[in-house]
Every structure is written in structure tokens, then in C-alpha cells.
Length: 214
Image (cartoon, rainbow, N blue to C red; front, side, top):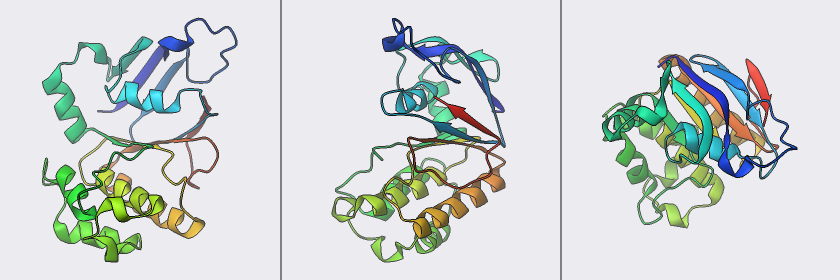
């Protein structure tokens, strides 16, 4: 997949708002594979909704979202399954990890869908992010910052053309943020993928091709 286009798209709850000022909502926006995007937002402006709309998790929006020219409202379950396994990866703001499973088990749940990464590679990522000693720890016993790093590894453990990250470093210090950024860039370059990051303040220090105000 090479392009994601939003045509006059906005959340239905914003339909009666006359004060909506955005470079994304109600605009014609195209996200292209290989580019880096930062979407800056204030609380309540719909950044998590945007990720959910594009991922096909929510449908309560107006306008058109299309992948390579095809309206995503036309997709069925099988198409969405393939898209989420091969083309789209999303790191949720709330992470959506399984607290009763170990850190490695949370990653392997995703990885086993495609067998994309070896266990050796995944363990190397844990070491690179400073949580190599947490591989066999239950996620529910880890700090939120540690969980964010597990969620990043899980998001990278699949093929993707577009990687969406919703507030990925909110609980990380500068050193850990940089380590996660380096890992993300390395894998996205390997796959020739786009990176789309949302933020209400703290964000990864990357070279962005476009910065959009939500």
C-alpha cells in the first residue's frame, strides 16, 4: 500500500462544530509510504480517533478514507485482516497489552500471525530498549514506560507499509525515547514504510516530511 488519503474526513461528533480549525479534519490529506509525519494535537481534538478510523476499528466519521484509491468502507473482514497483518501497524495510546502474559508472549502473539521476525531478533530488540531482563515478566507488573517499549516491539514485529504510533513516548525519558526512535527508524527504513506519530506535546525527535496540526 502506497497512499492513504483523507477527503473531508472528520469525527461525527464534530459535525455541529463551527469553530473547527484543523489541517487534517475537513481537509484533503494524503499520507505517502516512506515519509514521516507528525500530527500535533490538543486533548479532545481526535488524534486517537484518527488512528482508529484509519485502522478500521471505528467507523463513526464523515468523509472518505481511501487506501490506494479504494474507499475503506468497502472492505470486508478478510481484507481488514490482511491489511492489519501485512500493511498497517498501530501502537495504541493505551497499549492494549495482555497484563497476565509476559512481555515476550505479548510480542509473540502478534509475530506468530506472520512469522515475520525470529525470536533472536525480538530478544535483541528487548536488549536494545533496555528491557532484556523483563522478557519473562508479566506485563501487569511492569511500569507504563516499560510497557510502552513492549508495545513498540510488538508493533514492529510484523510487515507494514504504514506505522501509526499514538503518544508512543509519553512515559519515557530522553534516553529511552531516543533508543525507541532509533529502533523504529531502522525497521521502517528496512520496510520502506511511512511513520505517523500523534502527540499532544512530547514527541520523537525525527526529521518529519510534514507536521500537521489537528
